[in-house]
Image (tube, rainbow, N blue to C red; front, top):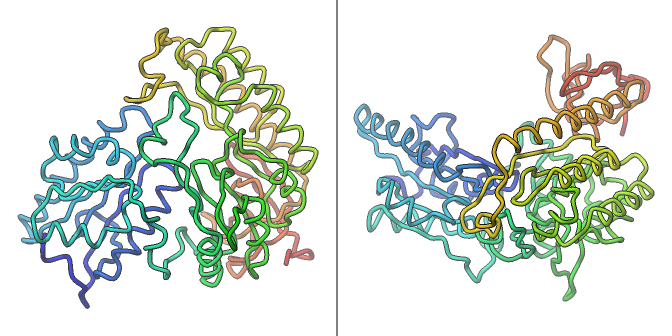
Length: 461
């Protein structure tokens, strides 16, 4: 697709389809950044794009087959565009499925021009040029020696709507090798960005209007970036970030219980921009299954972490991940998970049936749990989790919450924003409030959101 590789005063259309986690959202934004000097600008529809990138995720069930299905759809779009306009479309597959299935993608979908892994997207301009010179079928799924963040452009657009909130990746990869997870194979070993790189990007985001940053990593609390020749923890990094004028809120995800150090727990007490909300996956409440998962902690060790967190920050709310039906899970194991949920209580959660990922240890284990059993267990678990979420939302009725106003609401005269606990909150207010943190008294509980009344006499700073 040689007509789309050099800088141009006429923008070329770029359409990125993003599947999966927040880190993929961040990666997609940075791919757009590295392509901007070549003249690419985002367009809303693949039919209008000179380049389409499918940024994939390997976590969900049948991830690879979903990619091939989507590629079939995109192929029809690109062929119709060629017939009607005479314009070719550059088609790329990125992300974790690309990393794991690169050769298979090119074998089954030879019309794909480029396959690249999540550690190589900083080399996109070079790859596009290679395709222009030699034709399609380029694959780059190495784990390069150089850190990709050192080669990304400094000027980057914020990653979320209204330019008020943004994701910022500070750590990638995983050394934990949980039995069910493909991340160590698709994202590589744990690496952390230098502190100065994180601070510089955070400052640029805040200067562009961002008020809230979510720090991202596969094991974000394993962060160990360097600063003045020494290793820095996530708690220390957060302390440096709080000095950025205009940054009002800080979150991080996803964490691992094994890396929940005491200094980080104390930071939830001492760092005023840390939101009182933590996503800390546990996956199971059975020690036997946790061992089979290679999680490296017990159920009681997880309970102890939660106790310490709540002692440090009494208003903290918790989110978690659960997998039901891991190979070998018995009724007794599942009941242990139900008991842990009752003991801890969660504000919101993500729960899934176990599904095998090719190449992971659990995929070849005996005693795979029948699908109907997994279905019944998941239904029971989700009913309990929904009950807890409703109870948490109900507990906020009558309280005053600081809401970061992000947009107008669906109804005339209404605005909306996010609570410290990430719930959408709707209330009557003027659009001039957008971008401010205001105090709202919660008056209404809905299934997935809250309603309230603006405390006009007590606007937050």
